[in-house]
Image 1 (spheres, each protein chain N blue to C red):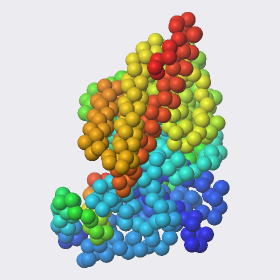
Image 2: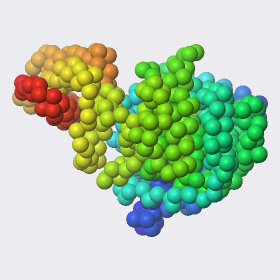
Image 3: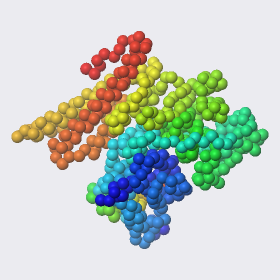
Image 4: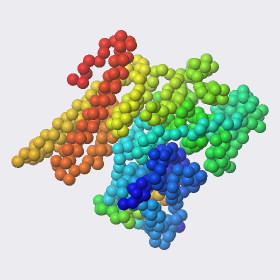
Length: 46
Length: 548
């Protein structure tokens, strides 16, 4: 899980940079956004 | 396209227990008029799994989303499987009722012919789809001026037209269920007041048993309530089940009880689905009109504290609203409900101190002829200023968004609400005038663009005027926050303005200003009629043709 989260964190940082640069996001990048927000919400619920 | 594909609605509800239960209320009757419809649900596993016994009664397919299923060496492999499974439902309409970021991203990734609620655009920004979703995003999430139950809003979003059928009212047994807890400290009392209430009810009603319910984390609070020496003599009729009941067992307990009393929480929504009469104590950031248990003849007690309801992120150490709601009033309400299943305010006034009653509003729930849920303030003929504005807002929103004419008598005004309304009307007129200017400059641009040689500098100057109008609207909203639902709703529409060229953009802009002007016009007429009624009754001169 830690490995998954570290990878996700790294990918989410890249997507955040893409958003800051005003680039259009691909479906794969929206998937990263979903996963990072969903997992963060899950952790807040615990 | 096959007929089955045409009639598949998937509800996306990623928020908590209470939201899931309110979503059930919203869609539970949809199949009565659409028996061919396939109704699906995508929900968060931790909240939906314990509610499957209820959800399965209303949804054909349910997909539980769980973070565990996303863990794989390929970072999106688990999610891809999830998306693939849900997409197999061939959703025609995807309705996102969650209003959270994660749900907006998921709604974007799922396939559907039509999407309502939040999605996101190619830059990851939130997009709101549908008029009632606009309403939630701009009004419900921004301020306290929402006159609708969330269940009715969900019904409008989904497009449910038929009136909700209510479960058979449970009158069985001699048990009352009490849930003296809530998700946040500001929404529930301390234990001592509950000890007093339970003692008085058990002492006066030797046939009554009380069951305190809650989650595991509420166990200590429940023990604190029952440890009070007052309750020693009746402890055999007082039970605690915190964390030891499944939600299915809780639902069954509620069905076997004639009354539920508690703070605003999912237990109240479950009680209303089980047909149990509810007495809800609304405190802190709870907005009674929005989240009270759906159904008829449920009662809600709310303090008249000036800062109630607050916002969840506002700091508060005094909890004045907790003090303004007295345990004597709650005890009296409970006793009347035990005796007669209803509350008579005259009896209440006789049995309680005016001091306690003057700090509290008592609402009774019901449905209008159009099937819209309402709370009637039965503790006072004079409605508060906030209730007055909400009464008008309810009429205008229903007319503009649903073409429903909600029949209602003139609200009874007092000197305070008259003064507030008189001060508000000039601001409403100003917003109307700004909208008329907005229309005018949008039209000027359209006229100029249609000329063979349009004057670019003139078009630019009109554009600057429109920007100034928008800034003035924002300033007006700061000066008169009651206007913010109108300003915020149409600002959101403006942010989504469609148009491939200047002509289309200006046409959209003209339409939006027309919307503001129409809203103000209807609102003004309601306010004017209401004030004139007051002036006639109090022999004062009527409002002149103030719009000029």
